[in-house]
Length: 370
Image 1: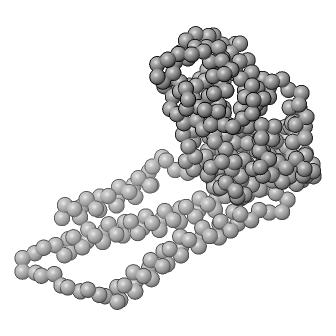
Image 2: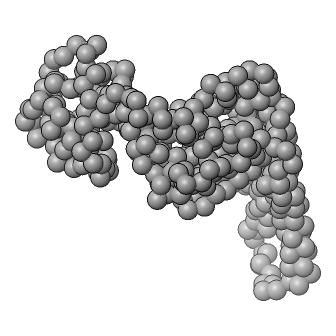
Image 3: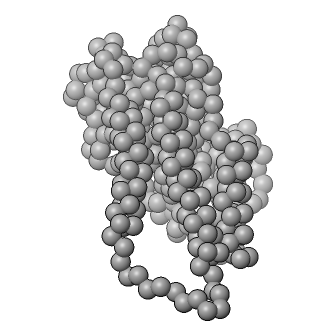
């Protein structure tokens, strides 16, 4: 009897929690209210089954409890009951799957004229690409990725020369216009997720996945990575800024094109090139440049400073140390940090450029031991 009361209490508590809980869906900011409806259908069906099972078990515990003079009846098979259970289960599964399949089919069928946005994920940052005036994205491939070509665009494809590149983790979108999102990963499995848009899709290395949505509310919305992609997973965040069409076009016009970015790079100083290389390689996901704590040692004020290693020894963080830390990061670990950085096979010019950038950060920072 006590167990039956507990089961009934669990069922009632579960219903009250869902009815009164403040943790619910974030406000909708796109056209995908159908996804909310599909989720609610699933919760109603699974919730009804959960309550029904607990109530049935409680009923069985009371109805068939042990009583003197009564013996349990042995019934190994009951075809009628099996048919009913099979039929009800099949109807429930169809009721959950059918809406989801219909919504997903529409989710991956963008309307004609949708604005194309490519999202590129890598440990642990986002970058974005829009087609240029020709309205077409240039071809890309992992074999083209380099310090001067972090997006991996094919330099021989003329369609990519006017592609608009957004190297930071903030992207702007126009209000009320359908957006076709192409998703590409440069390293491991990631998940592009903007909760208020109900928009999520995995990014699989070697594949291009896609979906579409229409922003219906202006504002700033956080981008999250929805797949565990390494120790810096929680830092892989970005922002979508939804604004009116005129503001979006002005922002887009201010972004560099592929051809323009390569021309500008040729005129950059070594430190400026180093910053670009570090950004392309995802260094800023683990190393801060403003003195804040992060997964790896901060770069502000690092160059020329004495650092303490995990074995208790001390050394000066000069160019040789930085070069070794890039190519063989486990050789000399800084005290207090885990050996999680992968080695990077960069040439001397790229390593020197990163060193110049880090040295420049030290000019405005106080020195001192670590």
